[in-house]
Image 1 (cartoon, rainbow, N blue to C red):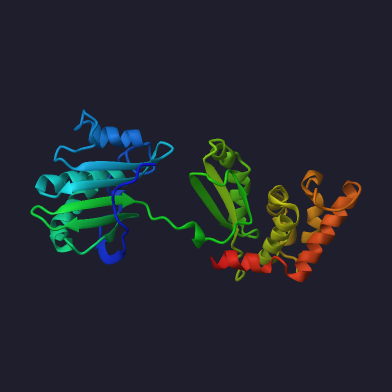
Image 2 (cartoon, rainbow, N blue to C red):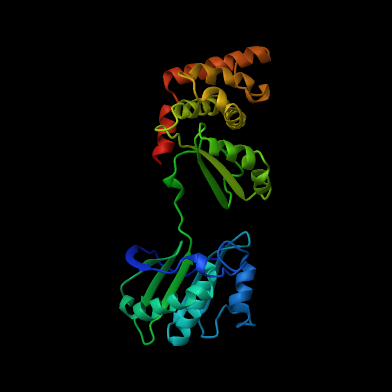
Length: 315
């Protein structure tokens, strides 16, 4: 991954207010999230046939990419009139809004760069993006601009109940879900089981995480369902969790209205394929299934999974 030459930034109160994206034509396949080559060809290569990464105004452009996908753009150089115009064009292209947002960005740079000189790194919001600005005094001022999407650090999240995909994946998809939620059921059946997730995982560069978010104020049995699923994950592992996850959604109508669903959740683990219950004791499949039921029942009665579910919801 290429990294731009930008120091650590802090958020300040500056805000770039732009007209909603629906008013502009989005530039196809040239923004953050699209192939990096398309962005380079559209914004730099046409002006810089030598491939030095410079614009017509002499600004240096550094792209960040992961697996061929553009993840960030940095622009450095003298911000005279030509430099401001080039910087605004490149940042606007990277947002996907193109000409519609280029003018407001140029206006912001014209109005603020000299005031920001020597003030240290500053971060402003450009629609859904963050623009990090660091300006050194001069005439014209020298500035470093870096555009990226906001990112949450990994430690902002609790441990997932289960994952699919490699631990070092470039892209992480985190689902926060409620087993009693009908829309979560649709997502599970139409997206997760419908082949979309499998297609993403084939690249080897995507990890999917399941996080508990039981909506206790509207779904009375969502929390015990989450605890039961966590019990299955803790006792029998990830494969058993995903099988149990599918069963909970498949039979949502059977347990959603129960006054005390714990017995049902314990029995449900009997329908998880025997191959996933390898950690349960017993000489044959029936005995292992009974042992699994007893293990989940005991886990629920003791509240062993309660804190893991609560921590996920808090996060």
